[in-house]
Length: 89
Image (cartoon, rainbow, N blue to C red; front, side):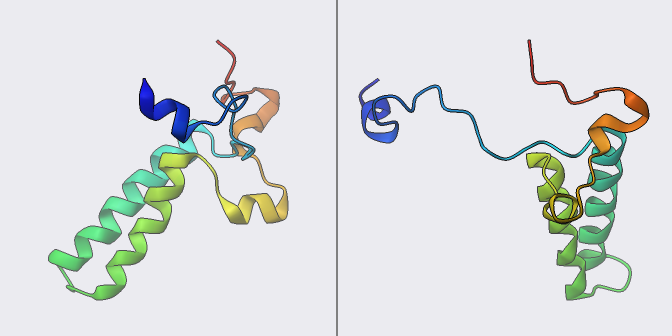
């Protein structure tokens, strides 16, 4: 398509992200649930603006990258010697 030539300069069309996936399946599910529960506090229950902090675990679960895990070298993909986040097809 025409927009691809503008959006992806030559040689970068197949470029993969430099971010390393470090959130495993169970961790990802817990983050989604926690994020939705925290966001629901904006509308029901205490109706606090602090519920918008639920966006943090929700967004990190979508992108499967946690900046704090990167800082401390934590990787929940490779727990118990099993790679649960393999990107090879």
